[in-house]
Length: 237
Image (tube, one colour):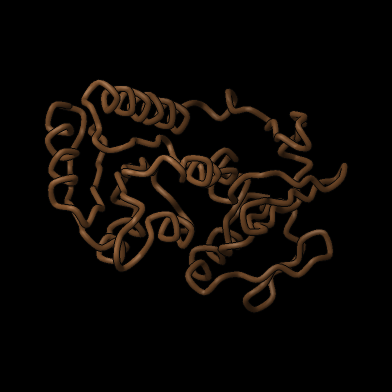
């Protein structure tokens, strides 16, 4: 199975360099190249893309700001002439950060990283449920805290942080909601708002466009409403 990628860069020559590099890899399929992030929005939101090579400084929209607008993100690899955005980029869980001009040897490392990530994800999707982990480690105040999936009520996004509400307490971590949601078993957790992911078995009630979890009313986002209600109403007890 090929890794489907797109390029977002307003500089034609820079985009051409990335495109030429990608041609060297038989496991990569380039779906297209865009000069404006908004033009690529639909193909990304439709889930057709596994990875995006994106510039930061573009005239119509900053690449990092574009990433922040996305709820369900593919893997992003930054391609930029500026080194100073690296920390901010990795806070958004980007897969890699490439500084222009991008030598092929450095690009190769990035593709190897992407390929391994892709293999790991596909293996996890096809693995029997009995082999799934029952916990996650979360970095809280410089410590790695083990949190059992069964203890989680819901997770709330607070800009560049998340707050995990559990039976044993609440934990604040420097991580994106998209990032942690991808690490949770899809059969047990549901993203139902750009700011909330909930444990399906902890939902006490569904009322209108909201759910009740741990006595807290949580809204269901407009773009999630149909899928969320279908999953909630058909979730195994």
